[in-house]
Amino acid sequence: MKNYKSLVLLFTLITGVTTLSSCQKTQVTEQDAIEFTYIKEGKEKPANGNFLLYNLEIMTKSDSVIYSTLTQPFPGYLMANDTLKPQNGMDEIFLGLKVGDSITFEAAAKIIFSGNQPAPIQEGDLIKVRLGAYEVKTEAEMQAFYEEAMQKEQEKSVERAKELLVEESKTIEAYLAKNNLQAQKTENGLYYVIEKEGIGEAITPGTTLYVNYAGYLLDGTLFDSSIPEIAKANNIFNEGRPYEPLPVNVGMGQVIPGWDEGLMLLKKGSKAKLIIPSPLGYGEGGAGALIPANSILVFDVEVTDVQK
Image (cartoon, rainbow, N blue to C red; front, side, top):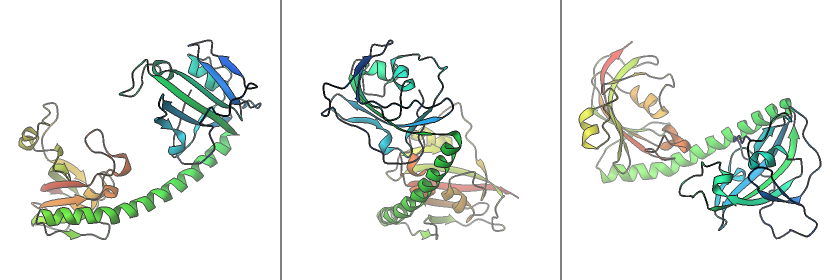
């Protein structure tokens, strides 16, 4: 069973069991003994090599949604292959899907998630599943579908970024006022404060800058630094990593957009503060556990050397 995610298409998924009637069929998987009921049973099995699209919703006993393809940028899909052997009860259900199937079932979290349930869900917690398969596509159709949907998602992402830049500019300006900072703003939405002017020629794309830095969330939480003293003072020191200026080939898309743009405003010896709205940082995805989605970032940077 595979579930790939990429772009939002709204298709109907049966989400309740109030429509159940005596004519609906219930079966039990050979493995894990999952009892599942057809709210509606389809007839068409996808041919080997074709792709079956489905929507999936996973909920707690109290109907709190854990996961839903309807909130993801792409529906679930699997490639039909009748030589695959199910490894568990969930595999049996998914590998047996037909177009038009609407299925509901409940089982312990350990069975649904194969022992990898997300926290704070426990192995024995009851989990509800709603599953609906609705369309078959050939490989060529699937590729075209994916490309079209990706294009639409990219367009939506651009629009969301524009909206965030406007919203976050208000937050950043409040931060600047609170901290008595006189910042300049680029056309792209980057805020910067030159604290020490550098020397030498203007930086051009492809130039390598060696940069010492400390990166903070807007609330002052340090998430990374190339300076050991700062890392130690904030309890994030890691003896396994080098603490030295970071070489950055600027203007080449090797770092977040806020860094690419901000570093090109500097010279050798420059010190600056970069206040980076989330679309110019790590955006909607964030970065690991320390940088949440849509985080405004503050970087103190110093250019220690320049090599062209």
